[in-house]
Image 1: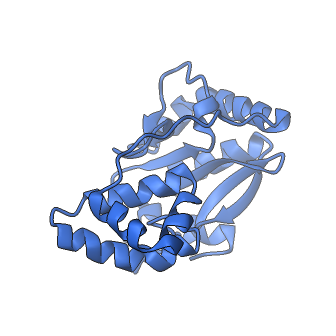
Image 2: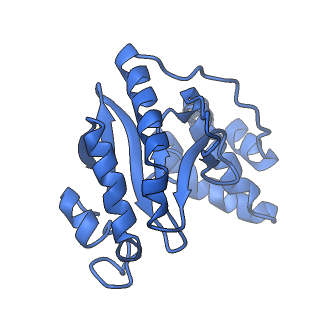
Length: 206
C-alpha cells in the first residue's frame, strides 16, 4: 500500500495489481477525487495516508476518508453516528454497517454541486472532534453460531480472547461464520481465525 499521499492521486492506493495503470479506479474518478481533496484541505483538515487512502484529521481524530471503486468514488465519515445528516445524503457502507457514513458519487461533476453540504458536514465533524465528543456505544446484539460456542467451551484461552474483543470485532466473526452454509466449514474457519482472535483482531484485519 502507498505511504505517499501524492501517489494516491496519480497512481492509486497500491492494494491491487491495477496500481499505477490506466485501469486503476482512481484514474476514472481523477477529477472528482481531486475536488474532494481540495474541499477537505480547504476545510483545514490535516491530510495523511491511512490504509492506503487519503485520510483527513482534526484535533487528533480521523474525520473522513477518500476512496474509489470501479462503480463510484466516495467520502466516508468517521464517527458518522454523530452527524445529523440534515440533507439526507449519507448511505450505509455495506449490508452489515450500523450507521450511515458514506457519500457516494457516480459522476465527477457531482462533487461541485454538493460542495456546500460537504463543507457543512466536515465542519460539524470538526466541532465534535474539538469538543472530544464520541458516539455513544450502543448495545450490539447478535447470536453466536453454535460452532463458535462449542469451540470456546473447549478452549478457555479462545473464549477469553473473544470476549475481550470489541463488539464490532466480535460481530465481524459472526458475520464471517454466518456466510458458511456447512457446519464443517464454520468449524474450519474458527480454527483459521483462532490466532487472529488471540491477537485481538477482527475477522477482516490483517
